[in-house]
Image 1 (cartoon, rainbow, N blue to C red):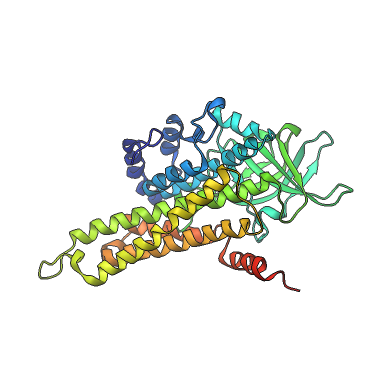
Image 2 (tube, rainbow, N blue to C red):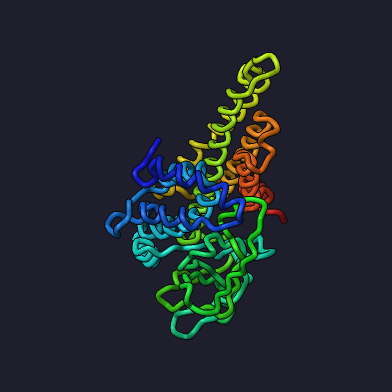
Length: 381
């Protein structure tokens, strides 16, 4: 299936560069330029603001296709799409506080995700960074952010920190920094097992200032029903699941092709081996079950019907299920494809390293099970 935003010839050029980026631990500069020129970075910007107006459900399908061509490119671009999705979702509720994201994305700005912090398992619900008010509605942020994809190219960084100065208690402050804000250091420390082209470097903020017009939320720490925070959680989990599902789909396709091409000593195709047939069938069945879950939850966001006590656990469960299923599918693809897939020159070898990154994204397996246990059984005393 092709699309206007990701035509097949563009995907093939992107696929052709993926191995080189991975081998050289290099950023996907050419991919990003071509995606921007194709309008892919404005895919979810509403049409009235100059974008393609794609829904979240439609975007999940595009991201699956891109991930099948170049997982690290898709993962990094995913973070830009998360912010656009959040702004789109908030705007659909009549809240224009995040329109700056949509307007600047339409103008060509590239948004990155500066949220994760070392040793902080609260993720969206609490920050170890500081947000100090400037007295005029703006804030200066100080702290260390990790896994900041798009590090060489972002022009806008969505981030948050804790404001402890107010008489109303600690609040999480969310805002968007410009790259030239000052007090922003990007450490060139990305040398990971997989997703190498994403260049998700550590970002150190030292009094990096966002003026009042770039501050979009000030909310108490902890779980919240605020549409902005819920929008981040939903968009992140759903789009992330789409990326890893796309990786698994590609691995399955490669494995099917390899199995048809391999022969036993007597010339029998491996595709006739009952054990291989069963393993690939099992992988395909497991992967087939993820697609409708992604589509259903994305549609809930698009139609503003998501909610209730199980909303966050459902989103977490999708991410956990999608990434674990993708990992299992890629492993099955490697197993049936033979020893050649163990060499770094093999696409399956790269897909296997890339898919492992899924286990490190929030929500992790432990928090997913805690959330469901609490929803079902109540909190522990």
